[in-house]
Image: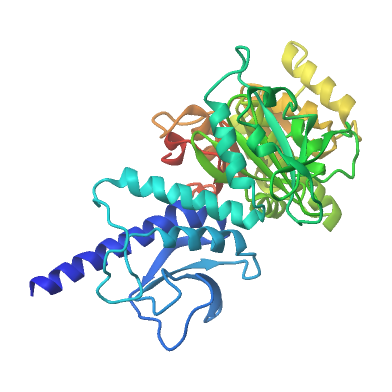
Length: 463
C-alpha cells in the first residue's frame, strides 16, 4: 500500500509538472482557446513522432500534448480554431523541456529522472528556462545562436566607457555562406562593443558565428509595400531578415529581440522570453473591420498592429479601441461627449490641433481614417493620455479621450478603461512597460475576455 501511495503521489506531481510546462511555456506559442483538458489515458501500440499534434474530435479540432514519445501515461488537449497552424516552434521547445523534466512519463510508476526537491521550484524553472532557450535556438536553425545570446547576456551586465552597449547581427541560418574569424568569441573582447548600433548597422555572421561582412540599413519608411511586422525603429532591420536570415538585436536596456521572415518573433523582456504571435493579433483585428475588400481589411489590420507594436516599444503606454458601428453613437454619448472629434468645440485647443493633424495626414480629409495616417503620427496620437477610438472602418472618433468608468474597477485605470471599451468591439491596452493585451466581449452586458497578450510582466499577467 505504501508503494502504491508513493507511485500515486509521483503521478500527481508529474501531472502538475506537465500542466505547468504547457501553461507557462507552450500555450503562449499557439493559437488555442479555453482550458487544458486532462485525459488520464495511456497511449499504446506505437511510438509517437511528435509531442504536439492536431486531431479532429467530433466537429472540433484539438491540439494534443503528450509528455513523452513512447507510451505516455496521460495527455492534455485544448481547442483550436486553426488546425493548419504551424507547430514547429512549440514542438522544438516542448521537446527540449521534456528532456530535463523530473519524471519518466513512459512508465506507470513515474520514476524520478532528474531529481530536485519539488519544493525548490526555482531550480526546476531555471532548468526549464534554459531548455526553452535551447529549443528556440534549435527552431531558428543557427549553430551559434545560443552562444551568441550568452555573450549578449554578459554585455548586458557591464558597460563600455560608462555606457550600456547595443548590438545587432544577421545570421545565415540557411548555411549557404561561409565566413572567416569567429565574431561570437570576439564578443568577449571589449573592442567588440563599437561595431554595431542595434538600429542601422550590424555584422552578418554565418551559422557558426564567423564574420561574413559588415552591413548598414537603408531608410525606407515611406515604402507603402513594406510589410515587416516590427516596431517603427526596426522596420529597416527587419526587412533584411528574410531568405534564411535571422536578426538578433540587444538594446542598451538589455532587451534581446529576434527577427525572422521580416517579423519580430521573440523578445526577452523583464527577464523572460515572450513570443509575439503576429498572426493572432493580425487576424483578430481583421475580424473587427467592416470589410470592403480583402486588401483593405489586411491593410487596416497591418496598420493597427504596427502602431500597437510601436507604442509598446516607445514605452509611452496607450489604448486603442475599434467600436462596432451599431454601438458608435451610444459610446460617444455615454463616454466621449466632449472628446468626440465630430463635435465642434472652438474652445478646445487640444481637439482642434488633433483634428488638424489627422485631417492633414489623411487621404480623405472629410473622414480621417487611422490606417491612412503616417505611421509616426499614429504613434504620437496613441501616446497621448487617454484612448484612441475608431469605428469598424477605421474612422477616427476620438484621440486622447478619457473613458468614464464605474468606481471600484479592478486593475489600473488604463486596464479598466480598455475593458470597458472592449464591451463594444475590440480594445487593446499597451502598458508603459510594453505589455500588450487585447480584449472583447460578445455583448455590452458581458465581461470583457482576453483575446491575446504578450510582453507582460508578472503584475500585468495576473491582471
